[in-house]
Amino acid sequence: SFSKSARGRALALLAASVPPSPLPHPQRKMAAVALSALLNNVGGKCSSSSSSSSRRRCRSNRAAGPATAAAPRRVLTTTSAASASAASSSSAASATTTEVDQTLNPRVASLRESKTMALTDLARAMKEAGAPVIGLAAGEPDFDTPAPIVEAGCAAIRGGFTRYSPNTGTAELRKAICKKLMDENGLLYSPGEIVLSNGAKQSVAQGVIAVCGPGDEVIIPAPFWVSYPEMCRLAGAEPIVVPTTADEGFLLTAAKLRATLTPASRLLILCSPSNPSGAVYSKAALEEIAAVVAEHPRLLVLADEIYEHIIYAPAEHHSFAGLPGMRERTLTVNGFSKSFAMTGWRLGYLAAPVHFANAAASIQSQTTSGPSSISQQAGLAALAMGHRGGAVVADMCAAFLKRRDYVVGRLRAIEGVKLPLPEGAFYVFPDVSGLVGGAAAAEGFGAVADADELCRYLLEHAQVALVPGSAFGTPECLRISYAASDDTLREALDRIEKALDPKVYTRA
Image (cartoon, rainbow, N blue to C red):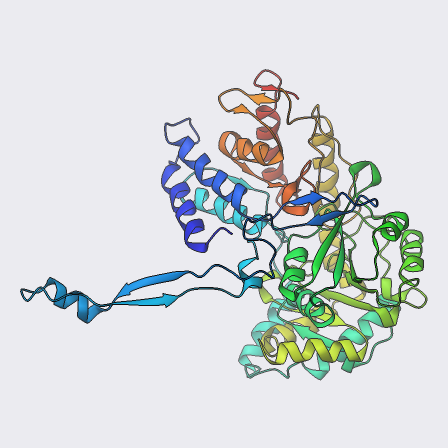
């Protein structure tokens, strides 16, 4: 896997190679080298299985073998300061060395860094070096945290809410979440079934680790959020990736799920609205999936509902745990980061039957303990803003809807782009297979073999940072976040359109 030190060198190379000017320059290819290193080494790809069900199993594709194999021993040789001093003195004493075994836990060594984070860092490095890069790779709202939430956080600091929180969160906030789940989702939970964590990402990870282990399979529809497969590997389980297409609306069907399940299937992960596609499962589609789940006594469902409030009519959000017979089999994850523009506050939660909630709480008690007491006071203020976040969240969603329609319209006008209409979240996930491979090539760049190369071309020549679909298990696509100002999106799409003009870009 791509080491942090190697990634650091790539970032440094990129930053050093970009001058404070958008004009062509001899060092541009140096930036491309740095980006290529990250694209080729960060984030795993999925290879198709040859099984009759046409499942796609997500593998690490390393020569060392599967994650459970023993990691090769790595030794670092160091020289002590005293010995180095002696070696440089007139006495010419011999320096003594110490060997440090740097071997990692094989499960940790198998993890790959997120391409979304890597590309966001690359865009930031180019910007800091003076290049006018537009970053559309990040997965967070561009709005400020609403004022009532900010004020509650400040009041918490002034009021002395700065001590350790109870491990699963304050009773007051867990009760408020139970009320929210009943009022907005029709779900009945007790405070003992709620585990507050340092972000929904931690909630997902703890849910996976709590219920999965070696020999278990986790069903993950593609496109998927980049961290799902890595969390499964950390638990010792095997991610089983089920591909979906733009023509299918990037939605898992009950038939595909049934064909994928085996006696080893332990967990199905569903994300609706979806990151990265913006797809939303209808109630009818979820009911069909639930019927398949009910046929398999071991199978649980992790429902990632972090984008539930960012949804566009006529689409509606439906919680999987609210379906008949599914509450006892569902681990629901939600949080405050997306709907309330609170990404930096790090506050999420798991709602699950008490047995599973207690297991997640045990993991948390031995790792991070409870989330920030200050953030929890802010979370109370967020839930007090009204049904589904009140007018403030509704205004944010209206702005996102306007941006979605603008971005979709511009992208659909580009020859070779196929794009289903996203019904939620703040991403578009165009299929760009008509732009890459075959004879596809760009003037001054060369062949464009795949979406990874297309992203490299657009960053190098248009100075727009996007995320290739390979990061999400769908290599024919790329992800664009429209969580940016209208002016920023307009400029970014102007640059993309110019870079893909038939005068300079040959289609596949």
